[in-house]
Length: 261
Image (cartoon, rainbow, N blue to C red):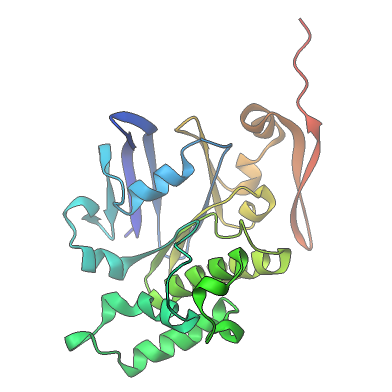
């Protein structure tokens, strides 16, 4: 059974669709990178996939159940979301912020259990924020806050995790760390949808979905999707994706030149 399915999904704002007729599915063990130029609809798609934005047409199914009819608590036990940013004036420590991820699993009276504490400690290590655990969240840098949000999602312990630009504020080492953690999550039987701008990072995941002006224009393995022709048509660049022992690298020679008239 698929952990998530988008079935002819359309969504937008004020009656105008930003994402149109998108369909895909993700099974346990799979990872999907969602890429595309600015304003392609990537974040809108992610919001629709978790019910933060109501679908204008089509539907989303989580573990075979319609998302629209699923209680919030049940939904939160199936999918965790890492947003691009969060309020940074919150008066909580890093450990407290990560512990919020355990809310869907809280027992009677909302009391934390031993397994909740273990999940929090494990997540602190997975996102490399243990040295920050006692610090106020509000005092962290943008990259540090992003890693805390990632740790919170890991602590939630869901089979499916959706990431919206999780590497945007991170240094190169932590970018690779987060991609490795996504891969490890899938290897344990989970799945992940990751919105990314950096195509060389996207190519490290199993499949790539390309959005362009709200439509899904390509879906498949990185080498089948991120071709020179696709790079030229969607991003307007002359380039190619090369793979070696250290992983994929995007080679950009310049902007695509307009055809001579």
